[in-house]
Every structure is written in structure tokens, then in C-alpha cells.
Amino acid sequence: MVSDTVVTRGDVGYSHVVNVLAGRTVAGAAATVITALPIGIGGEIQPGAVLAQLSGRPVFALTGAFPAYRDLSEGLVGPDVEQLQAALAEIGIKGNWDKKAVFGRGTAIAVSKLYDKAGYAKQESIPRSELAFIPQFPVQVASSTAYVGATVSTVALNIAQGSLVVKVKADREITLLAQQGGAVEIASEVLNKTVAGTVAGLQGEAPASTGSDSNEADAAVEPAPAAGTSDFALVQPAESLTADWAGQNVRVTFLKGSTAEKVLAVPLTAVSTRADGTTQIVLVSQEKGKTVRTPVAVQTGVTGAGYVELRSTASPINPGEKVEVGAK
Image 1 (cartoon, helix red, strand yellow):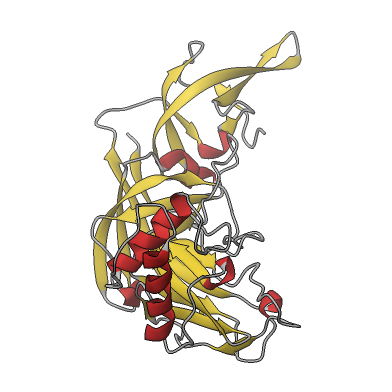
Image 2: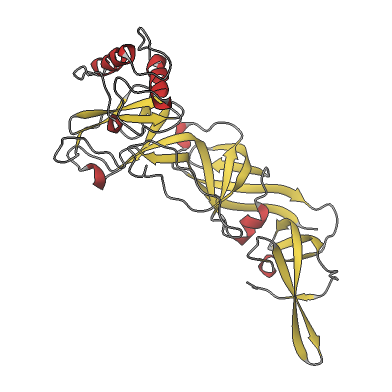
């Protein structure tokens, strides 16, 4: 019988973190420097808020599915115009609207109202450097190295998007155990709280999005790792975690029960991962005085106490056969 409970540690953070200053330049300015930071770390950002002031110019946070890719002014037509119109309507800036996706006089007047509402001189066009489209609100300032007087290219203002999740470093045992949808328990000693969760999947390491050079506040999407190269197990809490969980190192217990009967099991270190993502063990035997190593593809099951269940094998394996430990 193999018991399947592994206790480890994980870090609580937001599912996406984005540097909204990345790539931003102010046209006509000798240097793009930070002249104001209205929202501090931990501050909540709502649609229409000014995220930062760069060389005297605002950066507006607005709802949108994709980043701004050009300056917007009267006479333009396109999906980016439609997105701007919808974002302005969402924050209550309405007027005599033009046709959908057409930047006419009505849209120009609405843009003017946006600047006036934020305390800036009225203008009827908006540069892409002053637009930060964010898919969903509210969001928070997760971290920042920005300060008034800093050159934008040397600092970061990171906003957190999505929900709080837990990242667990995926060693061999965790990689084998972290089946998608598997039950997990998350405990904070600081808050004296325990919540249930599930394994959302395995992922590779990825840095926070820098927004490239496109003046965007785009979501950082972590790429799927190559087979056998997972760095983290991602745990999704069953209920939304409150902001005071953010940044904590928590206890994470992977729970998958135990096998009901005796099973064929091998040490965890006997299982290795092939380039194609499948797992194998290596049987060791003696034939005519020589050591013979035979790789056998296997499918693993319950993990616990340093052992893993072999649910199926490509070739028959008998109890008592020797396996190579530490095979790569």
C-alpha cells in the first residue's frame, strides 16, 4: 500500500504580472521620466485611473482586450477605435457617438472629456503611449521600482492581473504527484487559515511580461514547458484568496489518498522522464556474469513515502526485480 500525501511550501502571487511602463516613450520629450505616481504598491486600479505621469503626460488605464498599436485621432477607423469607444462609455464618458469603430467628432469630444476629467488640458486625440488597455478590472500595483525622477527604461511598475494562485517548485516527487485537478490543501501560518485547492497544471519558468516595445499593458502568458521540463506546479484555490495572502510563503499539502490494496511500487528516484515526456524505469539483471540494463516504459500512480505506484508497464515486471536508482 502506498500513501499519497506530500507536504511542501509554495509562494502566493497573482496569475499575471505586467510592467505597464515597458517601452513607453513620450513624443517630443528629450527623455521619458516619471513625473508622478498616483497609485502606490497595493493600491487598487479602476478603469479611467491614471497609472503614472511620464514627462508630464498621463497613462490611462482602460478596459480592453488588446494593447494600443497606434495613436488614435479623428478620421481613423478600426477595432482599436471601437475598443476605445467602449472603454470611455464604461467610465461614463458619453456623447453623440459616431458609428462604431469610427473616430469622428463624437469620439474626439469624448477623449477631450477624459483628459479634462483627469485634470489635464483638453485634447481630442490620444497617443498610444498614454493608453494602457487591461482586460479585466480591478487590478493592483503588485510591485514597483519606479520613483519620481526615474527614467522609464530603468524601472518597473508591475500590476497584478487575475486571481491569487500558489506556485510550488516542482521537484521529481511533485511532478509525478501534481495531476491536473488533484486535491490540495493550502495553509497560511501567518493568517492561521487553511483553504482547499486543486492542481491547475505544471508550467515552465517565465518572467513577467515587459510589454515589448509596444506601449502595452498586456497579460504575461507563461508558455507551456517542454515535456519533462516543468519548473512549477500551479495551485488554484477553491475560493478567492484575499489580498493579505499575496506574497506569503505557505504550506501546501498534495492530497490524493492512498492505494486500497498492495501495489507494485518502486523508489521515486528509479523513475526518469524521456524526451517525449513519457516515464520509464530501468531493470537491472545479471546474464552470464554481465550487468544488463533494460528500459521499460511505465505509467505511474500514487506517490508517497519516497515510492511511486506502477499502474501499467510496457513489459511484465515481477516483485523483487531490481531497478536502477537515479537513472536519467
